[in-house]
Amino acid sequence: MSPTGQAGFFALQFIVDIVVFFFVLRVALRLSMANPRSPFVHGVATLTNPVCRPLAKFIPYHPRWDFAALLWAFVLQAVYYGIMALMLGKDYAITGLVILTLSDLLAAFLNLWFLSIIAEAILSFIRPVQYDPNLSFISDLNRPILEPIRRVMPQMGGLDLSPIAALFLIKISEILLVGWLTQIGKQLV
Image 1: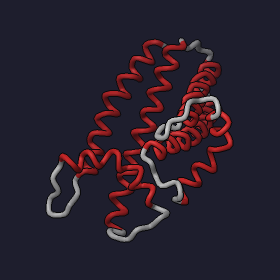
Image 2: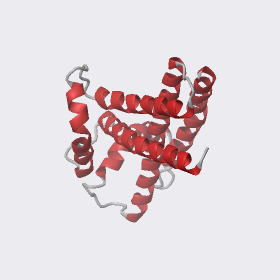
Image 3: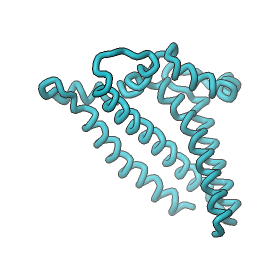
Image 4: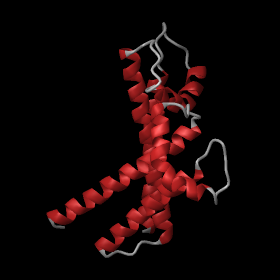
């Protein structure tokens, strides 16, 4: 493939990944019941509302799941695979396309939580006690993952090791689940 083609693929993948990231972030923030008055949460909602709100009128409402944003993320990722297939002159089987799309979305969720847990750990050393409404969304986002681990894992002298356990579990899940789904998807393509 020529350098121009490679640059085109990179640009397409970069743009799709950024847009899908915002939809995945919207779903994760709703799932974690993040404070909607947080400036960041409000910003994500404002950015994605123009396409999510019209679709949400046709999809059943659930207080913790944003099915419209999830559907947009899925469709965009599937369209990306379709465009790639056209550019490469390949035919993708629909089942393989669906499984690869699900694999990418699962990877996006896991990567989001991995990075947000690292960000929260770093911020806890920089600002250990101070509450910042601009950054509260990070702890809101991580709470559903870290709280169950904190209940099981004892604290060691005031040191919270639950982020380390969460990062380990997220990466193991990514290796096993995403790897398995990707392998199946590639076999069906």
